Length: 468
Image (cartoon, rainbow, N blue to C red; front, side):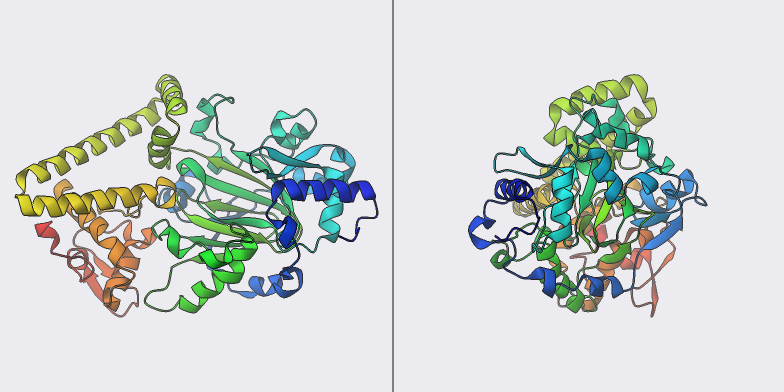
């Protein structure tokens, strides 16, 4: 490797960090694919944005919860970063001066330990790197270290996200939730869903980011890079944008295309990523940002389910703290428990009342559905976000939801185009959230309307819902 840094010590530190963070590239090389020249990042920014944008100074907390957080709709927010001290202090020059000898995490080794570089070395690396997928500072512990924690004073959590129920988890047990993020062009994060059912916000101070967001119901197999290209950069944003993104664009207007939202985030904007959404982001320029994950009353159901299963000790202590300090949250949790209990009893009752043949078939189907739901999208099932109209009876809602769940995995390969279109209608929350039993639903091509009751018996439902 040619020394492009001017200082032997810088080169030594950077090479050491690379070996630790990505040992599989030691033989293959970091620049072999030539993406610094072949990946046209500016071209990515020319695609039209497909995301809602709001002025955070004009939309109340209640409006935001109603229109975006509860229905789980991604949105870009402007107007909330202009008063951050970070807009003045977070320049590459000032960060070098103030934090030059402070270390920041830029990766993990094979044993899960943090790989760190001093700020001055990382900034030198950013200036010169031609790596296909560069190192990326993604540091969750900056707020726990004596000097870097001064960064906490440079930003304010937007009002939309301040009611974080994870504040009732002790800092010792609380999962990582805030990150100082800095990296060169081509760095980024591969396709993923945020952990534990949390939602996230990302405040961008410097540079531009290209985002692609995919609804929760889309299966993992349809959004991950193919196995034959995952040996070199398996989970990197560059791999996704060179292999998956072109396919999604080509299939976008077909009956089997995957629905997605794409947009460019600019300095001074905040991206809101709802619970359960797949997302991938690549830095178009050298960027500096701050991102946090959170649990609110609006995504509590997803977080409650996920933590109960995957972090039981933390979950128990968290529930204890909520019971003492947040009775409003506990009322919601009791409701979730009641619904889950009733659903289990109904499934057991159905199994007992059916004959041997149908019982066997139903049991197999239910088992498959439950297994699938637990492995998809970080614990968020395909139909978690489907909203059944309030004026329908509870029993009919249950039957409709059950039938949709049983049918969803057959939609993509369905030969019936109406079936696939109807599916997209069900899976797009804002088009489905506020309809009642007698309302009409516009079809995806807007050529006609149907009643909700008719829609649930369209061909993508295997049998009439009344017989579910």
